[in-house]
Length: 332
Image (cartoon, rainbow, N blue to C red; front, side, top):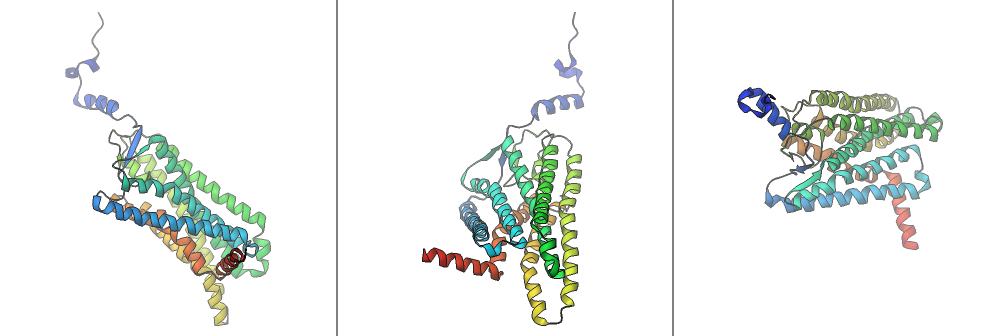
């Protein structure tokens, strides 16, 4: 006679064994997630919808406008504007990865995203955000060469060097995104499908895991440390050398001109790295998720909108190119 399996008789199971069986059946990976969105207060949803819709429209028009200006005006075909072209492209892409889905949370009862869709959004968000951090460091290096070694600028920042730097930017973006996404798909997520965020981000998804997230948290600190640390060190060294070079300029006008060429980049760097470091490099116990959502708004929504405004309103070459383009279109 076959003996009865202990898994068929709850009286033969210890309490811990019963819990293990229950967890295995209930906590299978979910086919979809529900994004909680930015707020659960109904009276705020429509005002926030129109506010962030306006932000997104400014982001799209500003970044695509800057891309078009740089592409149409030959005097902007320089290394500085080559990197600015790619910065605008990155800002447009990663804002498009996030904002439309976030807007859905304001107008739908349940903002559902499939598991493959969530992992895809996570990958592309990370790809573009890491690429942005390294494109900003490439722009800092470009400013260093332009100010500290102007006679060798065209040789040092040749088209081949610019393309290699850009390749490095996107390789680092791909590597960072792959590292986080590959370890994320190994997790088993709980039956509770609610993700306390307006997008599929690393930390909110780790909260929904039923398996150990120790390795994922280690990857976050290592990879985010590299993706923020390396560009930050590069930018600090570049601007330290730039500052020492500017202080050696005798004329006040020369100093002012040198500072003005860097001011836009310094503002963009401060906004992006400040909000990113505040979100990812603080212990979760010190930063509740609701505060984390507000912090992440800066580098996901506000920074992509402000970058084209910062670089166009404070840049004489862009203003001249805009006037020329508008005069040509008016004449035609």
